[in-house]
Image (spheres, one colour):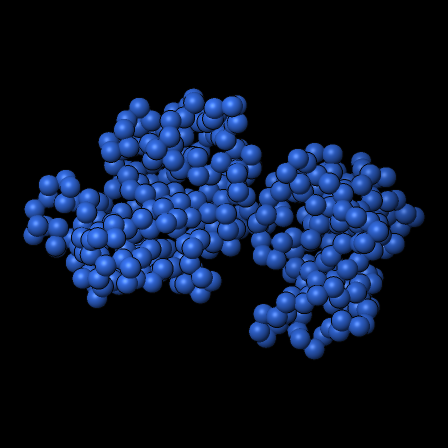
Length: 383
């Protein structure tokens, strides 16, 4: 059982910079666990402390019930794949893959057998006699993975291994990593700044911000139930549109006022968010995924097309509305520029919109995510 537990991990660098702040997390046996977040959030520092390349300022790292933060990196029985493959240029692919076994004194026959098995798993068996300079980026990264796999460690650590690949190779490599991890069943911690990659790979994802885990869960838990504005905007492609709205009382009930448009809150929406009854007159954040917005000639919201992105048969339409936007910032939550309005994104057919004509939109208000702008936290729906 290769279960990894981090308890109260803190990393403070000389000068007082706090990279990781009392972080707790558990990676279950056989799980592919992804750490995701913007640059500087502490994810690579966490990985390097697990690997033994850096020492935590405080806290404990436990693997299979054994505290490993007091062991050297060589004693931890783990393997790491870096952003740069870091292959030895003077060795062949076969020698690179088998290097860790060779320095451990394993006999040549055993090394050759295991290199053959691993190279077949990674589809690089036809490259074994080549030097790294003759490999493509994708091939070099697979060889680097082979060098880690051949050790049969308790734990794999992967630090943005695909960030140097082009878009198509990155998509193919994601599928390969996932297939290999499932086949081997090795517990894996994977670091990336790319939320699309995180969503594609992770059994569970931990979103980091300023050295702390903001939210941890399955990809769909993060997508469907973000805990705050930061996660709401960070997870999902295209990003969630977030507008500033005022909860208003009208003779026919409550509504959300978006710019000059009132969206009535029906019984179902109020049953889902009863707290709104206590928030009349207050501004809140209204988060809308692309699937919650649609073109409707009778819709209440008038919009203009800002720009479109072709997806092939469909396109993403980014439409400006007169409601102010709300954007999460590293230092807190900032209001968008009301004078320039904000953008709603939806998916439409190519012949549905024109850059030169206004259009009307309808919103599924029951699918909206609501946020308290004083705290940035989600207003949780009733279960």
